[in-house]
Image 1 (cartoon, rainbow, N blue to C red):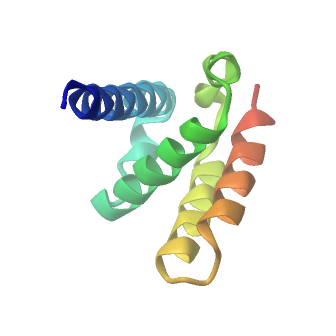
Image 2: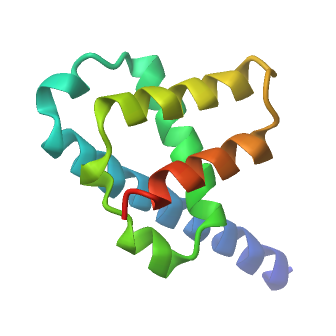
Length: 109
């Protein structure tokens, strides 16, 4: 029984770390472009959070920490959001979308 509990705690801890990493990344973006940030809808921000969270899962933590999220432009974010929307509409498999997002954000280092 304790083993199952430990696994659940581990999964929850992983989820918390992922959410925190995404929030830190989004805060860096918001600070860099406060007026442009207001142009994004809550739905845009939700899909951006989701796809960045999936990217966080696939990127080494040391690489994630080295990404300059503040260098992302409004156009970069629109592209990332469009990629995420393609997953939602089943136009693109999530794995391919996550790989594309990882490539897009890593090149901003």
